[in-house]
Image (tube, rainbow, N blue to C red):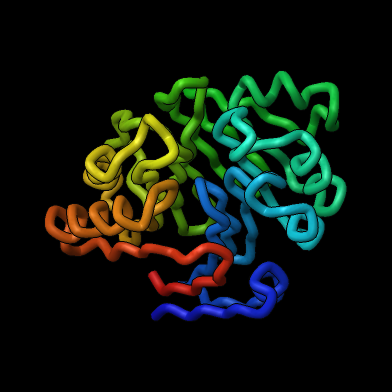
Length: 235
């Protein structure tokens, strides 16, 4: 089941009641995701560039924020600090971002993504995987309660056989030089998600990704999200 709301999606998501097998998210473009599931809210690659300031200020409830790399369409210091001030949400970020933030937020709230071992923060277990991109990049596998989620930023394909997930946000192309529908398919073949959400690409690239995954992984549902809409799904 898919449900969309158009009035104030951020406020709607924050206040939304979900069943045990439901989750909801908003896709803001590029790799920006606000996700709610299992009574927790997570931000992936949110920044003022894609949100605009008025929407940054609306995110008043947040449990964890993750940023894949330092490019301005995936991270900025001001938004990350404001999210922390508004919500107290801890941060797991690519090591290059960690260096930018380490004197800006309390040490106990900030974690550098490391591919060597999982990071346990509150209810979450986060594995970071070194991705491939013109700048250093981390992709994330997050587990809490009984749910596992993958977020690929806008990385090229890297081996992910050990990171199967219920839900995967998979990059499909433009404007990133690193990803494509074909590389997204390779990620999906490794992850074998119940639901794959196409991100970071043109509509044409996302539709090609959906066709590829539907052919190769017929048990995986593929979602092409509209920007700035609240989408609710059942796993």
